[in-house]
Every structure is written in C-alpha cells, then in structure tokens.
Length: 235
Image 1 (cartoon, rainbow, N blue to C red):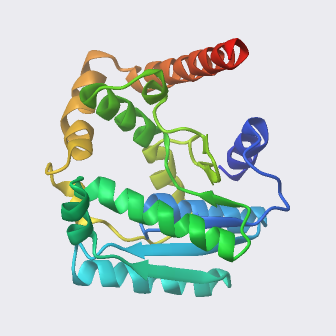
Image 2 (image 1 turned 180 degrees about the vertical axis):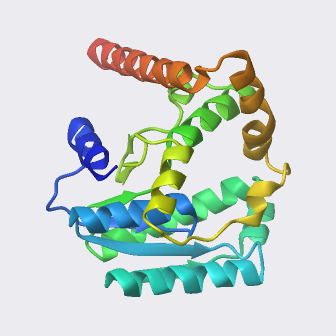
C-alpha cells in the first residue's frame, strides 16, 4: 500500500517529498493509516486534531489518543476544541457543516502560522462516492459531481486512491490501533443514511458499483476542467 500511496502522490502531483504537510487526524482508522504511510514514506509532517465537543468523554479520549500518536511518531501536535452546537445554531447550518467550517478555518491559520506547505485530510474513495450522492440530493452543479476533490487550495487528499476496505485491511495487517466514532453508527446524518442504506442497495444492483462510479467521478472531473478552461478562455 505504501507504493500505491507514493505512486498516487506522484501521479497526481499532490506535493513534493521535501514539503511539510499538516495532517488532520481524528483518531479514526483512515487518518491513522494516513499517518503511518507518511511516517514510513519519510515525509515531514505534523498532526492537528479538533475536539468538536459533540461526544463528551469519547471526544476527550480521541484527543488523548491522537496526542499519544504524535509522541509515537515524534512529530509536532496541535489541538483545538470548538463550541460546535452554538456555532451551528448561530450560523443556521448543520452540525456537520459547522464542524467542517471550524476545522478548515483553524487548520488553514495553523498551517500558515507554523509554516506548513499543505494540509492533508484522510478522505478516501468511499467518502468521495458518498459526497457525490449528498450533492445530488441537495442540488449541485458540475463541480459537485466530482465527489471529494483531490486538491482544494492548500488542502490535498492523498488517500483518495484507496477504499475503506483497503484502509482497514492495511491497519489490521500492520496491527495499528484506532478509535471508533460512535456517531458513525447512527442514521441521524444524511451521509450515514447514504452509507448504510443507499450504497449497499446499489451494490446489490451492480456488483461492480464502486469501480463504475469511481470512473464516472473521474469523467465529471475532466468535464469540469474542460468547462472551466473554456470559460476562462472566453473571459
């Protein structure tokens, strides 16, 4: 998996080996595997963790776990807690959107202050497919049909070459430990509903669903780039 990781970074030109990357680490299996791959690849990185105060002692446990992980890899560690619910109510946005805004705003400021070149999140293929359906249901243009973008300003997603199964298999094979987020088990959020019900139904209809939709996402990405280039040319 390490070779696939490095080949993917090189192929997509996500970053150079000598750049410093700030990793967003929740403590879940995806970000734990991302940390392990960065460490084994010898890429300079630091770890940042957000506590959104949504799961009480479980959230506090995540922070302690990630802090210990940073010590294990001997890398810098930063964390910040947020009053997510009040922020969500004040801005009239969902809890998930509030958490997203708070996380990215803080991490961009942190990366700039600590002189990191880029920020890496652990989004993978399954996340991208779920995002595609979320955007379809909420209404979107061609940009939203690409799923999770590989690059977004200073944010890069070096795990988009792998699906959840591959990530979990790697973690188990390497005997890594991680934290399970209990909120992932509920159908309270739209993403979880799509993950638990819609996608399994589509896989029953098409056993090659993941491969098919991943290819379609790449087509939408190409189309969006052509569209953007055309508009810029006309401007």
